[in-house]
Image 1 (cartoon, rainbow, N blue to C red):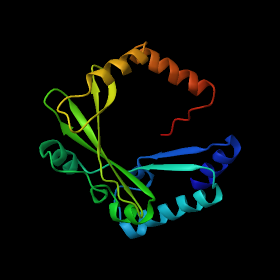
Image 2: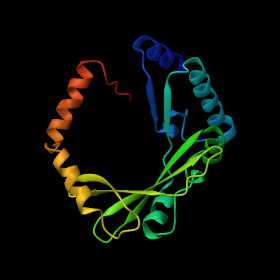
Image 3: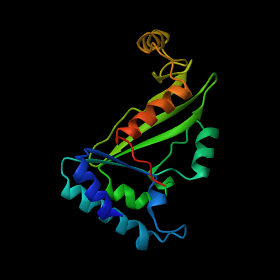
Amino acid sequence: HMNLLYEYIKENDIKFVILDNLMTMLRNGDIIYGKDFEPMLRRITRLKLLFQDVTFLLVAHANKSAYANSMDDKAYMVKPSDALGGSTLTAWAEFMLMLSPKRGKHNDFSKLSVKARGYQFDDDLNFSYVDSVFTCVNKSKKEPDSELVEKVKAETPIETTKESAQAFLDLAKEKGKVTENE
């Protein structure tokens, strides 16, 4: 598969590759970390070394118990070890973004924390949908900044519907900008 991905990136001058979900890239459901996960990361590393101007974003979802813990416990933050191959990923990745879902009084939100090799980020960011607008919530306040919500609403004149989103996706597929993997 990596040879096909290499050819596709090269032929189409791709600059940003998202590999989502890492677990589905493994051969089967019986995962032996050292046997399956590390060789896959080595193949991705080889691609990255071949394409130095291409950014690779790997998505590894946390296990279901981490999601439940995060929703039930305000202090719980999703950790890299909550994902399949988390310890291997932590040693491999330059930057890691962790989203911890939380239940708010009026709406659910996600806390974004960042881990980076050799750097400490002190603040987490809170993201939420407020009145169908995706916004960043100041964590020192109980509610989103209403002024910011109004500004985002004003800058988002057309509400995206499922139909318009599907039409956009269909057009992108027709133009060869989106490839659907099975």
